[in-house]
Image (cartoon, rainbow, N blue to C red):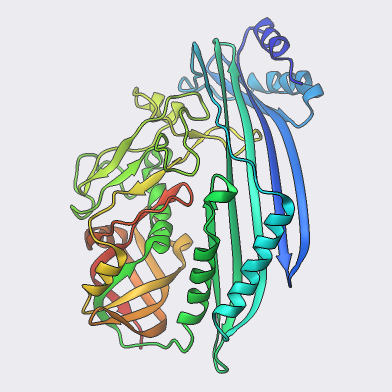
Length: 435
């Protein structure tokens, strides 16, 4: 058990400002393969990150052994005098808050095992072209974190989320394809297992026999999961640290049009629909709803205390720690594209000629500084509002600025499966290269 009073007294005795980030983490993992339990594992980890501020210098150390917290503090104290001076380091002051949530208990282990085994059976029964299932994996993450500092701050929060995923392969005798799908929820009862089965089978079979088509300018549709991946790429451009280091396409464009008027991007950690709602960030700053892009106009970047101090402004409450071994960085807790009016089915029906994207390849290689990208795509050709034939070995290349301005519609269906979420996105007049 961590002796908080001892730690605070020890820091004050050394005449420094200090912060303790105390983390307890538990992970449950269950894997089904070939109708049997392949693995069940429970792992636990706890640790303390120590941050010290002294005369505008900052140092950091951590330990996984609570008994060695004094040694970790001494290590940080030994480092701090050798660190560069930077007046922008700071800690929150005079805060006390708890964000403790309760969660419904999981069903008995036998029921969980049987449910995952049933998923395997349902996948095979859905389509004769399914040839193999890599595995069915369920995992649960539980965390309890405390943020305590020498400036009269004591904060505590917890969270839990679960996810299930599978990867399968399908063959029609001539072609082979794979499909991957996952679902997330706060509890076991939030997971939609039937939807997982339907989607992974569809993904694995819908591209069988896919081929190239002629290069052309066309309408493309990014369904919710693909659009969410696209939004995750865009999210790096809103990070204030990237902006301040000239590593963002959006630098210097506040209150200017950067996208189509139909696009609004929101970051709202307080939204109760999100997977992990947060009342405050990992530096203790209160979170709130904010528009990053509103009707195509850039409104805000994401800040932690350090980047906010650089600009003599307030943090946006986006200081995020990966774990107790790291200092706060900047990230979104819950970023999403504001929904439109029509459903995915209605948008598909409105397309005379276009491509429904199932897979975007190479997103991680896109340049968020210049905006240049070249992505491999696979999907389904749309003809007169219906899926016509599968397509593969196609490429979309260009600049993110042009792509953002080509968005003509956003769908109405929004699913929160992670820290980014998006409805379907419709883009017009996009150059697709094939044969």
